View 1: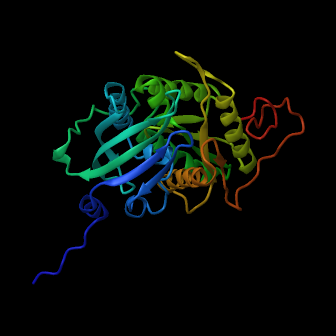
View 2 (view 1 turned 90 degrees about the horizontal axis):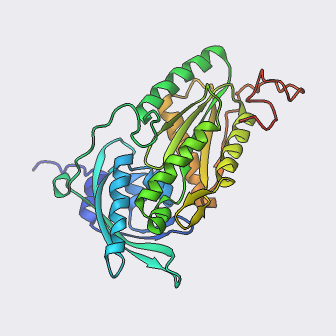
View 3 (view 1 turned 90 degrees about the vertical axis):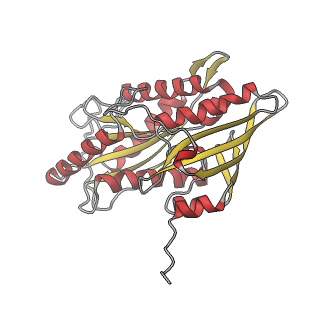
Length: 323
């Protein structure tokens, strides 16, 4: 008798069947009634909308949000959709989702309840648009391009001993925005937030789109104090800037997680992984709109000139222009 083969997590998920969820759209917290987190992402808790949407590529976010748009065609506010998740081991997984939107007495979205089911790839249409090195919606570098830039910058930072930092930022509550205003508005809001963030960083910093709801920013000449100021300032830039929608204006929140280097043990892959983990762990505890930026004890602090009009160390200067 041949020994039994060890089942992979994705095989166990297919065997499990429907994994039910209750998604609070106001807080963007997800209550899973199943083993999703332990099997898919044991290191990053998938209990917020941003942490789940982070597993979707931009094209798969479109598929999901367009599926949710079907609530407007249904008397009972039901919807269904199929898309692909990218698991932490970089393997694609086909998912079928079915749910119902619950509204308050003023017809504002409250929550989604339903289930996801992991299926074989041939059970759903998973055709993808060709992906280049740049995101089709924002024009920003893709995750792969940003990864290469980060790897190069890590090497430069290690050689020069000058600190730098990386921020992972999520545009929060995209599912709520889609349920309230439609998928086109949600996608447009993401684009406008991305453009606002790009205009708020220095010319020699780099920004890219790393997933359906997340952006990555490489900050040069940034110490442990600079990254706190940068994340706080960028969050405030977005929260203080209402975006126009058909019904008026919409306030949007972003969350961030960051890391300062150099550190000989860090690679581009684990810098991206750690910052996302910091981001989503903090969200799981404190909700959306948070910032958590731990740093290594060996990171050198930049000189902080007393003359705040100086631009020599803009990242370290405590001024309105500091990022």
